[in-house]
Length: 575
Image 1 (cartoon, helix red, strand yellow):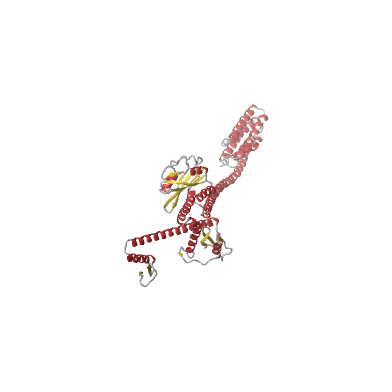
Image 2 (cartoon, rainbow, N blue to C red):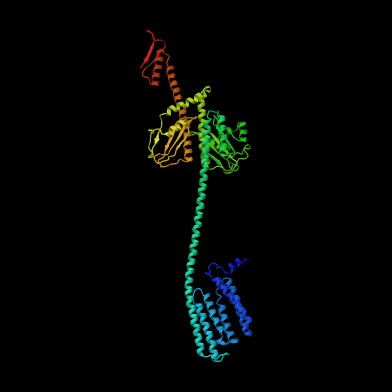
């Protein structure tokens, strides 16, 4: 055992012990043991030697008990030593005249040291010493014990009084010492308690700080992850818009490849429902296994086994956290590394037109946040697919580019003077603010313009162009009511994403309006044709024709003629 550890073991206070009690007890008992051991060799009388041996044994016993922390046995050593001093004084000394009796004062001092709580043990021991001295003195006075000097009663009384006064003074001093020691012990205990409370409060505070720091780091990581995913979704949307004139097959293949690369997914597939709504047919995939399935025209029955069939029928997203254990998953040998899968409906309005199937090599790779972001991307992809289908149905193959340009111009002309604004109180009006430098710059450049003010007199502004096929058809202009507002990347990304979706929605509304107008025209033509064909009279046919045309076109004057005007020509007019 090292010296430091041994010293701590012997002298350092244990829990529950008074300050310095252990060190005092062990040191004094060690000195007492050495003193009684030397006494064995200092005397010759057998009685004195036996007395010294007994005293030394008691010293060893009390020292061991002190090391073990049992301090109630310490009083035994002064008592036995006092008796041994009396024996030495009588047998080998000069009786009550021997100076060895002064050793009892040292023992009395030792008893006061041991008596840390009160004076009672010291008082009892002092009375015992005085009675022992008086008994020995009276025995000598009455010649019951041999003595070298003539001992009288006056000597016994004076020395007894001497012992009494010295012991009383010692008790008074130690009484004050105990009071101060109790105060010091109380203060020390209070300091220990205060220190422990401070340490506990410090530990709790550090724990809370670490927990909050961990929560903030986790929240920041989640926010950064979500921001990155939103940026990836925005990039994918932008890429689809830039390449909108590609064929459907190329555009869908580009979408699967882009989703796989930007999100790090193992397999991305796009299924479209067939005309009879019986099967979901794989139209694009990025993985090697997906290409093999495309080659053999892979299709899944709607409502059949697997989460693609389930989503195609229900129109609700589905996550399989462990596809090997999911009850509705159909093991696919073309995609053996799949460990989790999510399928999202491609919905146009309330109708499901396909399924976006995403698979990962990691178990539990998808969460609600992924489902939300991918659902938004799936909805946008559905709009693009539907717009492509509707747009290509309406235009002639030889006029693809001119038709696309014409649609954009038509939409731009329609929206050129349209717009709305909302004020901080929540009211909406069609009164637009005057053009600002930010909006003019955004319209001219086609890029987002961020205006962070350098002074309080200038408000923060954000201008994001609304573009359809790289053509600016509108502007979203936002002014902050906060002084010194600094636009964040997340806010800018959010407005840009909304701008892209607004452009798609406007295009979709235009296509729907054109289709509705064409349907009304066809209905009007069919109705007029029916009215005309219901009669076989020549004049009645002419009259019905101009009457129906006048009602359909809302003109004030309509006429029809079969030949150039002549004097005798047939002409029918309606007003």
